[in-house]
Image (cartoon, rainbow, N blue to C red; front, side, top):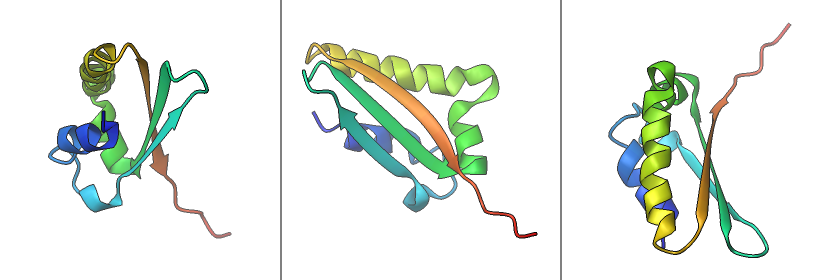
Length: 87
């Protein structure tokens, strides 16, 4: 299953800059667990998490259902790009 395509279909309408979103898929050795890292700009990451994590939990639930069809566990993590501050 193409998890990256699913992720982009779900989050591209939510974020302001879909081209800056980085999705990294990491599978474990036994193939049962899939870790998905979504990195975006700070404001877009806040939108993806949502108030009280509602959007993030909804995305996790959708991906969990998709993973169950292949007998896999999906873990979704969000990170933001931080600009380095010059002193």
